[in-house]
Length: 314
Image 1 (cartoon, rainbow, N blue to C red):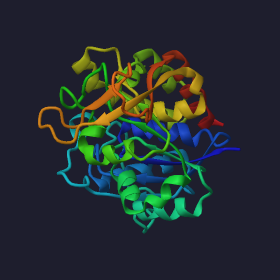
Image 2 (cartoon, rainbow, N blue to C red):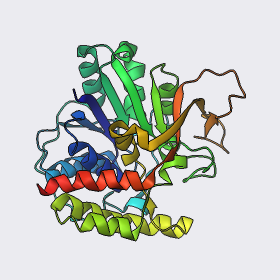
Image 3 (cartoon, rainbow, N blue to C red):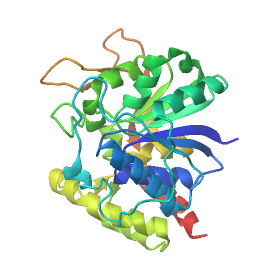
């Protein structure tokens, strides 16, 4: 039976690819809804971009909800310098046909989880954790209904990508991340240590473009724009596909290597705000709260992605 999931996102080119990968995998994943949050760009753009991905993929029946427009207690940071002013630069942007639901994303998450069986819904947040933490904070009774949380955020050996210490998603709302990491539900975390291993090299993007269907073409066009920042910053051969790692893990966990660790979030220091302290060697007595993913078969990841994107040509 397909696993019930909600993708909470802030599209973002890599968020868009994560959505496409989920759309293409209905036998394994029952996508209940997409919820959006402010992060890579403002909320009005992230909700539009999520609906646009539904249009491109022909998935008009997936409900999209807009959530929190700013972090729980801090000013919003965005990332147009990476994603462009639309958040999904590289493709034509238009007003999508897929409607925006009127209910607030946090209200939807609470309502849906309270009505669900215990441990039956997987949350997949790939942006700042504001929506998820706000729902937990407002209604802790949702927690037993969450099967697991599979998130993208944080870093250990890779350091930070927005500050020397912090990865962007965690830095935008460290207070929300702190709530989520302390929530007591199973968490699998895709940090920069693993996402920086899945680079969208020229050869891999060419394989995607060669599929010649609208979703694959949109993916290749977005990655062509997305590559320019990280290849210059890291002198790498392609930009890392951060967010699709969450969906790939749900589909083929055997592609990844992980370890149970404690992960704690810095919420006070001006110097290291948003840092994820990963106790990889268990040098503290803090409880194990995260399956920290640190390795991936990158070729296997792209084989999976390309096989699923090819389904949109059927």
